[in-house]
Image (tube, rainbow, N blue to C red; front, side, top):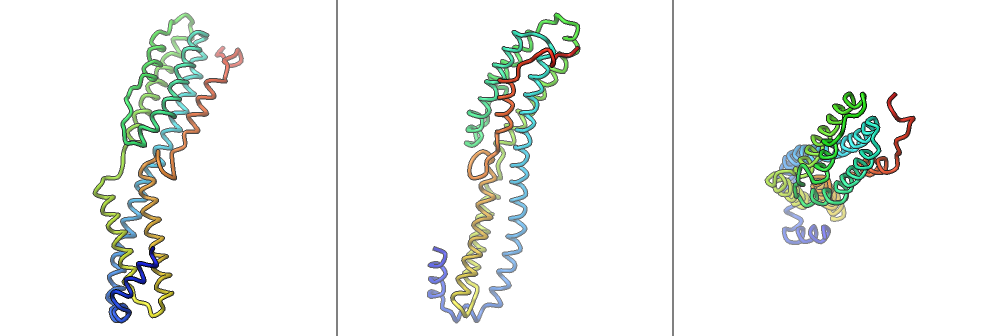
Length: 247
């Protein structure tokens, strides 16, 4: 398609035009290329920072889930263990299966969720029947608040996108740069087509990367929820034993 466009332009305008005005077009392409390079770098840095930020929040959320499960052990309450295990399992499943899809569709997940509220309700019913409980419970409550905070940050970061005006301007610059490439004059039609194809690939790939990374939950590059899945498996399989208890 790019080759057909290049041949159409050469036939429509004529090869003489390309050669006669190559200096003017070269200057114009240089200006557009500079503006495009700076703007593309800014856009890609922004979307990559956003993508990396969401990934870090997911990893942090998984860590807090594991910490919450570990602290539950120190309360030495088998009934509480089972309730927290089930609540955290449902929480992890809701994040992986439902909230990731909601974020991909730019839908803000409800916070606090039903699953998170259930964890809070279970902790609120903890009975202090051991001298260690008064020491451990504040840490458990702190871990829950940290989970709530990091969840809120992850939801906010997941639905944050580039402003529509920036994306439209980037698309306009990409199209303008490609059209400018097609107006550069070369005596050899093969060299002309090679330059046009390579320029088109660079412009298209840069726009594709920026557009794809702008949504961390959809497209070719997606946020990895393996950390949450591993935390879920840890909660499901790790049995609190005497060697894990605080003496």
